[in-house]
Length: 244
Figure 1: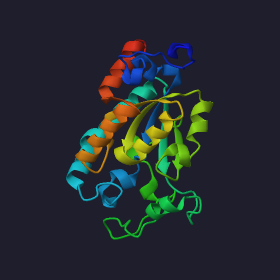
Figure 2 (figure 1 turned 135 degrees about the horizontal axis):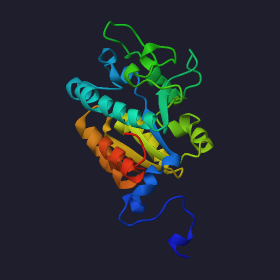
Figure 3 (figure 1 turned 45 degrees about the vertical axis):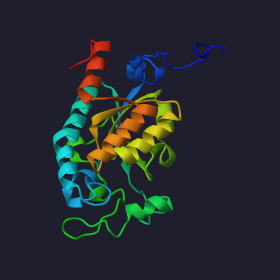
Figure 4 (figure 1 turned 120 degrees about the vertical axis):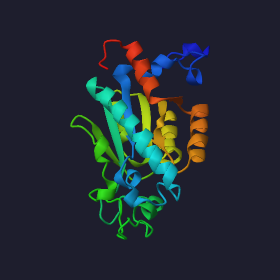
């Protein structure tokens, strides 16, 4: 039996990413934009710490402000204008005692080193400011927000059930950190049969070296890597009736 005789929900193409036709990565009716953990503790410098800049504030916050957030706003705007699905993840506990969180993740969500610029401790309990999604890219009324308690969304939330319930199998990823929660979620998604695209210029990591290294690994094994403007152009070319 030849490989083409097997059932896939995509077309094989040796010239495409991972041997799959590029068109299949952004099939409109099965597509969702995934925004990973763009919460205040990640985007606001007052929470600067080990989970974000790790001492590389100049690179991290300049990239976040000048490149990543503007590109996420751009892709959100395009998706909203065309009624395409947008899904946010938040890493946060629903329990003030963090009893719903794995012990390894709990250490980070309530770590003693989590101190803001005023010297106050913060945690990632769901109601705290640090855990809220940055207001510049806040979810709309038709968007889905998923709380997760670990790095990879597929092992620490109900995202798989939610995606399959909405007939979604093509995912475009943005957010942070490239080499942590974004990477973990992409790897878990790929292993569950989802086609993954990562927006290289809409993701953030603690250093350029870490970001570039993870992007190279992801595009080698798990995801198609593109720029934000390029994926919008690809989608508009395939569906010319969509709004700018």
